Length: 287
Image 1 (spheres, rainbow, N blue to C red):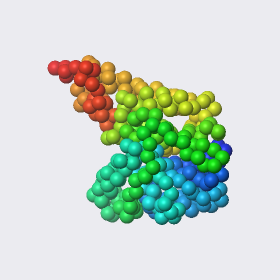
Image 2 (cartoon, rainbow, N blue to C red):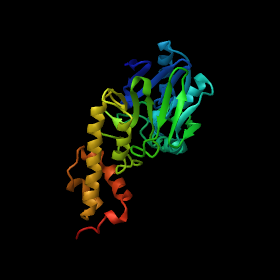
Image 3 (cartoon, rainbow, N blue to C red):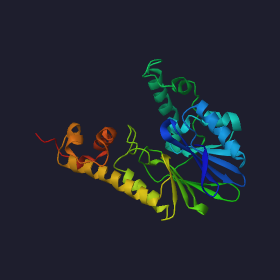
Image 4 (cartoon, rainbow, N blue to C red):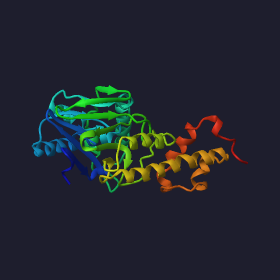
């Protein structure tokens, strides 16, 4: 749909592939790009659209976490813009290459032709993986000349290295995949379902009732949407604790619980949650 200004000098483009969002924050010193899409080829199109805004030169990139649909455009931005800094949480930067190689392995094993073939297969495989080179552990501020942009690691949730981007002067928060609008939250094989609600509590503390919140995927939302999703994720966490505390086996948990999201979206969440529970919160499986 192209870039749309959702707050003062904050633009968001929502791309059909993965329904992923790429955001741009403008300042007197240039543009900060948040997430870079899922391949080198896709990112080159993003760069053309950013330049068409005529809002300034790209001076930096932020990855909200390590997943390939948010990082595989890093190389294209480096090629087009020179040695601009790429910022990420230290855990995300450490895991970017291994996470990307795992995805490349899945694409490489996928069909080359036929109705099950992914049309993006070759461009994903051709992408050079570039990890962030500017990292932090808790929070850091970036100076864009006439405004400060804050990068905050509110805790673990969708991954171990999630960050949010706060633009205080226009009350805008770019939440990455800690918040998703177009589908159920991404409970993947590297998620932290028991900690995710607490992480969203901190994220909510960075917002106001008037905040613009940009999710990793889908339409721009408000604080109320985030509160609802936080409570849904909280219910997932509490249900995992309750079932494990009653001695329900992990293999039976999806059938035994009442869940706020479809079961096929929660298989990894349940498995991960059981693995992450301390021994004191588990009982031996019931006979």
